[in-house]
Amino acid sequence: MKSVIPVELPNQSYEIAIAPGGLDHLGNWMQPLKIGKRVLLVSNPGIFKQYGERAIAALEGAGFQVATCLLPAGERYKTLGSIQKVYDVALAERLERSSAIVALGGGVIGDMAGFAAATWLRGISFVQVPTSLLAMVDASIGGKTGVNHPNGKNLIGAFHQPRLVLIDPELLRTLPAREFRAGMAEVIKYGVIWDADLFEQLEQAKRLDQQRYISPELMQSILTCSCQAKAHVVSKDEKEAGLRAILNYGHTIGHAVESLTGYRVVNHGEAVAIGMVAAGQIAVELGLWSDTETQRQFALIEKTGLPTRLPSGMDLEAIITALQSDKKVQSGQVRFVLPTRIGEAIVTDKATADVIRRVLQQMES
Image 1 (cartoon, rainbow, N blue to C red):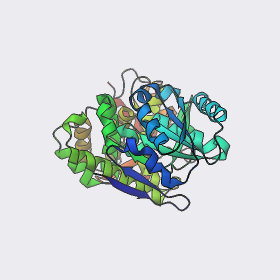
Image 2 (cartoon, rainbow, N blue to C red; image 1 turned 60 degrees about the vertical axis):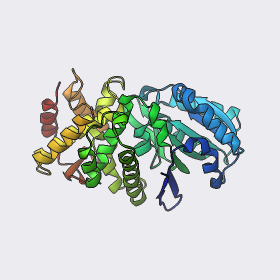
Image 3 (tube, rainbow, N blue to C red; image 1 turned 30 degrees about the vertical axis):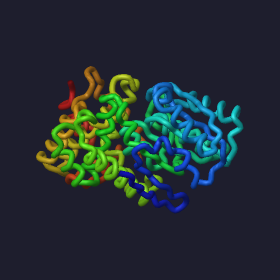
Image 4 (cartoon, rainbow, N blue to C red; image 1 turned 90 degrees about the vertical axis):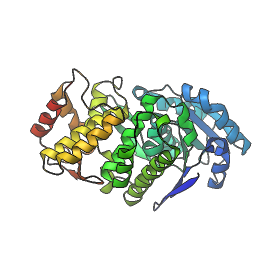
């Protein structure tokens, strides 16, 4: 079943196309964009081995001239050094302002390829072809691009919207189970902050820890509902001046956990799951939502096979200090996205260090 979701923006609207088998028609999907013939395909070695030849064939079949740049896999390689490699290939291949960069991979590849596109020749077109669930439902949509600083995640970046997001659900068949679960963390996030119906659909599923236990109908609903939620929020607030901040639910403490463990202990989705458990409990402490609702969230995270406790040996004071580097800090106050009911959330700076510390102590392994 093919569906197209528009992302309506003042300067550059685009479409999210959910199309089974779409990878083999990538060039055809790109032709209406009226970009130049030179295309740089950015991927990592593992994804390229699986899907690179098909992507190149689809592009060349539509008349594009394709160069490639392969970057190492993993969050710890999301650095300016990796971006330099993209620039080097872009220069060698004479990418012009009419050219485009195509990101074939998960969220890390999408973030880096998008940032390279945002900054090469002061900005060229790019297309997202996400290969992980996390990238399909979240990272590929909305134009946030960037790399990590040694002291914090995604501190260097730019807003640069893709011209197209092409989601081929069939690519999930080769996704490792751990990466599938990581993507489900973002899906749960949408249920908590935006879509109570999606949350209830997930509750009704018998298992969520592997794709093979999820019906095609539920998978279509997961992709469509998540993309619609992200598209709606981004359309209302492209550059995170207000509403869009709710998309960071679970990410405040999650990013701190990722950074402090060197991006080697938990992946992004696992960190977000931990962050959602913490945020839910902080919301209870502040009287924003009920024990019943936080238990519903906890049960759903557990059913997905995601972690609900901090990695062993974490320094709680280091987490609290790291929160001061979060992008949502204003006037020195850490701002948390906290749920008020299933399907709704707010941004608040009322979570004191004592409340955060008390919640983190409850989550120690």
